Image 1 (cartoon, rainbow, N blue to C red):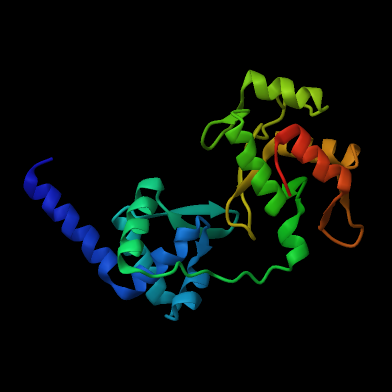
Image 2 (tube, rainbow, N blue to C red; image 1 turned 180 degrees about the horizontal axis):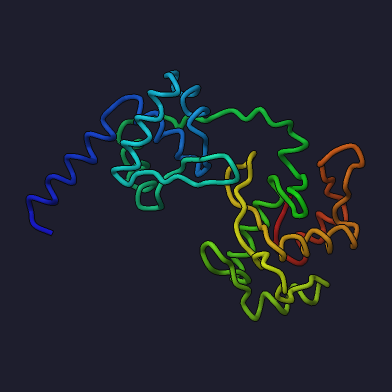
Length: 227
């Protein structure tokens, strides 16, 4: 890349961030979550069409990415490099990070089902912990390490590859946490084991899952996860 190319790229990035509405969007996305264009338009107080135009500009400069989940499209920061740069700029500006308020009931935010696997705060933290333990690795399609396979097998989780077309393990964007929880056949097997062991209980009148006392102890004992 020539010096002129670097200068042009830096100028384009600076111009994208310099707009007040786009800067507010980027600050909101600093919480690591993903939001719809509608949510961001409400949060920054602009029309939906205006928000879409701003988001397209941020995408063009590779500051954000679009994640499709079902019929919805979510936007989040493009990666750690972008977040680190914005963090430094925010510190220099001396401003606090704004937040988007969730309208999801607290009980459903904490733990619920997403079809046949876990969702909510508990599921997202467990998903992240599996990667921290290096039991899972990969991007769009996850793989189990031998350590992870052995550990989950000892808990009674069915880790056998699925014979169907269903993905074995993958990230599923959580609609309240706006981060990935564990989906696919492995996510379903993990929920089944948690229910069989009495660590989670389904409510009969909805999707809410109740984390039992035994479940809290099990999360700490087997995964080093405190909730």
